[in-house]
Image (cartoon, rainbow, N blue to C red; front, side, top):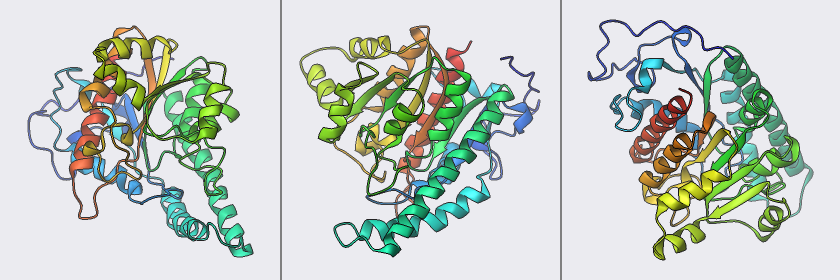
Length: 350
């Protein structure tokens, strides 16, 4: 795959100046044809089971990104290669508006008689999930075919299935670095086939069982644990309790990161659920769980992928949710994590 020739930023662009209100992601005045990195927003959260808000993640990240300094001490100047945030799909926005109330109806009926109305609502949510996967896959495939590097922004953690499918088609030997508080290996959850709690069950069973290295998992069912145990090493679990215990026993996180990355193949897709971080960094995410990675540990892990000589070919960042009072902390953390993901991805491809 050749890298397209990209026009430079405008000569008068000042990366240290305040962002204009109408500027793009990270305040950049770049067009899609001038951007090596394309971000695809997916404001969809139909199956969020605890509390909603992640559908507002892309718009919250856009607003918070204007506060991020463009010179990064670890990755230097990723903005120079052009970063473009696409407009959300109007069809996805409309589907979310339809599917979320239907999902709430299904969730509210759990434990009661499964009526025809509830079954119809559940079926429609699953149909929306099918359609969502097709739209996202098509958009990511187009961007990859154009020589772009692609990141997908949720929404809940169900949304990147199509993105992962598109990346696996182009990079069939890739492995997935999955950072999360949850294993997301349920065959279905609350009746939803395309649940945020089922993303990696679906990836494992529908997309050829690529290697998956999970980091920071603190909540999982016994069935999910058995699924991991029966995967013959396809899924490697580095649980939150295990990592915390090893750190408390004096093992350096640098050694743990090296061991984690050693299980990944040469090409890596990063799937990052923000609740993989300590919940003090993402208090309004859909399903926060105590403990989790620090911001420094998360970025160190990304750095270790790059330093090992592996290549990050794409990523998703999901479950960023602004607070009910438009609290910007979650988005501020998310925007900085997004810039690190972009920076390390580009750094790995030099």
